[in-house]
Image (tube, each protein chain N blue to C red):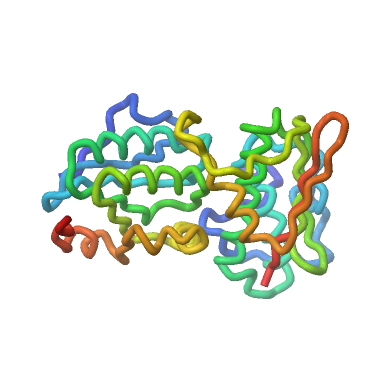
Length: 158
Length: 123
């Protein structure tokens, strides 16, 4: 049954059917995503669809697998940090700009991101995420707000 | 011999542990799907138990489509407890290991057979 949404292949490759500029507008292909994703997997799906729509739909071969992998890893780490350490994800947007993929992740905590190595008494998972984000982004900034913070990260798409 | 995991070892909607069992003297755990902090717990449990009882643990990652820092944490913890070999990593896992520098301390093998074919490192 066709529910109107484009299927995204598991392996991230471009679908055979390409979407050109004249294709009808579909919510999944827009730059701004109004709904906040439920979790990191949902945020990764948003970025996958965005990159696929932007780089596979114009007849090209799409981005290199490793570039997509980096973008999804940064997305996952930022959203996971917001959910686990930031009091919850309050906003998420992904857009393709001249310099690459711009991610904006908002959470409900005024504390700075967890940047330190994990301490032995903490939960069994965590602590390696922020260094990965730093390594995989061209730039990352934190804007503190009265009720939380925005983290803006730029991932190169080359 | 590879047996299916116990029913309670993974949530039904996200069986990140596809199978585990002994092969050629090593314990093999086959992971699958997307591994992040929401899904990784069953794999953590399987690997933790494997590390406690086996000299060599092979993690088959051929069916892993995504992995993040929670997977990295798992690898490092298991590596500290046993000889961990990563088999058949795809783009996502290979890239993660390289970016984190973990590829310098944990060995990867292109295939499961290659990972199983190497005798345990003498320590």
